[in-house]
Length: 398
Image (tube, helix red, strand yellow):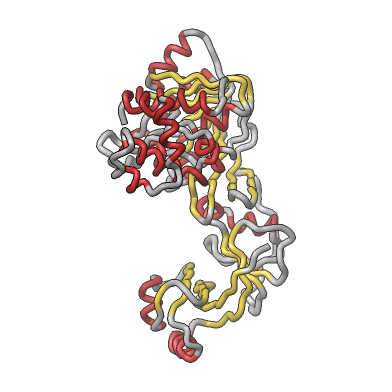
């Protein structure tokens, strides 16, 4: 998208056209010869429709949404988890501005840096539409801005960054120092300018590696939504007094664990079915390897299978747990011939399969049982000790 197209989309005529066609099929809009700039309007309608749930504030304001910026943007729900506050915040990576907008609600002033001129102009227009008057968008690189900011003797209460993890050719970047801006190279300067640095990392980034890079005096949190890890958030600097690892499950809750803290002692007896309920730990717990610590504090009577495995309970939790909760219908040692025969006799031809410490993959297991993946019943398979257990489940909701 070009600056000219951004400015066209900001004209009253095209704003009205987007609004008037918002419920139409974008493909039909693009072919509508009666509509000026039909392709441009169609693209905006397409991304506004997609933003309805992910970015409801942007949808309500009929914001301008470039396609790449939308794909890379946080959801508003994830952005709202960032609960810092203060007088001045710097966001080194504005993009579409979802994190900037969330931060502007808790800081007196937010300076948001964007190296791409088109994206910067889009952000300015959108912030004005959303009434975010305490945000200043600066079209510059993070490196140049920070040097100038430091030379002026200024400081901030928080400096935040979500480094761009794609190269100019679209290749995914893995190493933190390859991303832009290079946060590892900037860390010494950032530590002089602020007591609190926050960096959003790829959900694939290793938690232990995050502590290695940013130091023991850090807090690392995995944020998940609908069973998917959305981001890994690192907070470091002099303001971090209690190093910790945490999880936030959107619409469920959160849990924090001090990194130097010894987990509470609890008896670990043998696995002794029958149990009444099974909890599949949320992906954020598994990502941070804190399932057993969570069980020790939130579900002390549960049997925790090894390696961030399933939690087995005989009574329902007092509040919604961090994970998927099931009623156990049966729990038996895995006998493939017997299970296959049972499924066939019951007329079950497909099943939702969940595996943990299982030597077979889902596809191989489905073939062995003569069923298709996905559908009628829910089956979990987990290795505990030397035994592989087959568990039939029924979803329940607290």
